[in-house]
Length: 376
Image (cartoon, rainbow, N blue to C red; front, side, top):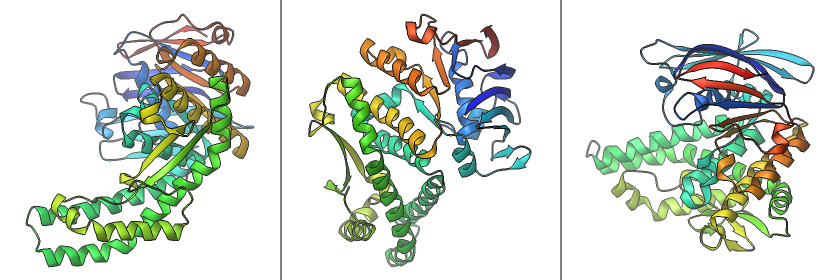
């Protein structure tokens, strides 16, 4: 699978542009703040239906314009597709070959893996980034999981609103408890499904993860992942055991939830721990080792998808080569040569490692939102 070209209008700081891509390596070159990541983000929005950056739809639309427009030509197998996105402040609409298409179908057809400085810092920065790391894989693992995650977030939002009403004294306690009891069955069902999906995904990727980390580390490293519910290991839990654990914790924290006005149970509070040589990498691994773990996890995601689905995802590298030491950078590049996936890379410096230069990259320069092709 690869992007052949993309057209943009009024997306972020890009007023208008069209660019064709190499099926192997594409470099978005320019100083900071010129639009390199915006162009990368446009491809990500097309293939994943949402941005990898914070903000709502309005942040994707160029200042004072009513909407943004994206259109990508994508080759997959023996077929060519035209994927179009129309972005309004209130909604996004996607069309595949002129027919409206769902986000799970887009993600199934056009899988994408993103490396960013934020993802490389996931171990040391906090549980929310580690959860996002696993949920990104969860959607690639099975695109229908995107709907599951969305349903859970809606149920969580409703539950939090009820708790906030009690905290702000908008509803009496007995009424709040009654409403929570009516919401809990659906909430626990979605929380259990989402937790169980995460557990399955982590188990399924384990062997690929081990192989990728050993390659990066150049040694036999013992790596594993644990999933924690209220600091308790849950990796081997059945769905029934997950449901029981959630309900028990809800009973224990009911008064605390009422006092805080937010839900204190569910997948949004769980943690993922990477064990490096059987030790918690948050506390017993160097920054270099932590980055190697996340790099291996992302590489494993690509390997897993190729092995299971017979298709390698497009790979997007947002200013990450400078974050890696020479050994990890060279291993990543060697890995990319082997799998022959399409790569999009943002950088301020065109001095590439030797193996990347051999790919005869397409170089696209960005200057204040203007796109120009430096080399094709």
